[in-house]
Length: 271
Image 1: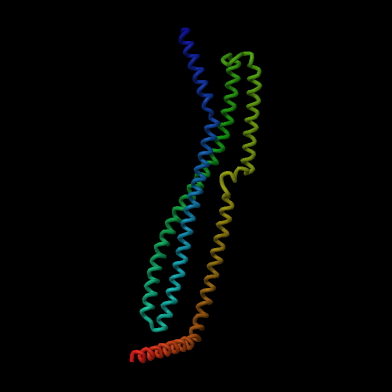
Image 2 (image 1 turned 45 degrees about the vertical axis):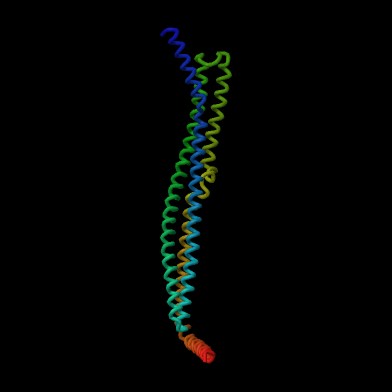
């Protein structure tokens, strides 16, 4: 190898060394980790927004259901007063509200399906972030150890800055290696104790399963209560109907008498 070739080789080696020092893998890994956490936060915000929209539709649906019940009562009262026209109007409004409720139920179901899909993606991304964090810390420790070893090797072989700094380079490499090893052990200890769980998730899998169990029990308890209430209302309703019928007939007669009197007055005025 000639002098020019050896000089070119040395120059290329220096340039590659500078480029490698400029790009710090540790910083790159930390940046990627932060990006993944930002993506996770975006997914959580999307789930929150979607849930809010679903709750709005559910509130609207409950209001329509209340209107349906109101129109039912209006139709009954109109029939009792002999106003079939008013009863028909109430039933038509009820039908319109029922159609709106059916449409809202479809939209709510679609939002629920989308929400479930986003939750699954969030859980998957959360797992990936956990796995990446572990690999990131391992790679950072390995890189720091390799970088220190490379500096020591360069100093010993004479490729480094000055042979007089060899001892200092070895001491610095040992200090950095010990620091990174201690850091790696500290990260492992914190991860084992679960200190980082809250950094990526508000609740772990056990909390979610316990909450699901409580929710299932509450639903079952509410269902049993509804069954009991419905059975009680059916029994009470039959008795109340038999007692209330004479009163309803009396009210109807009184209302008919008032209408007849008012009709007679109108006829007298026209005469």
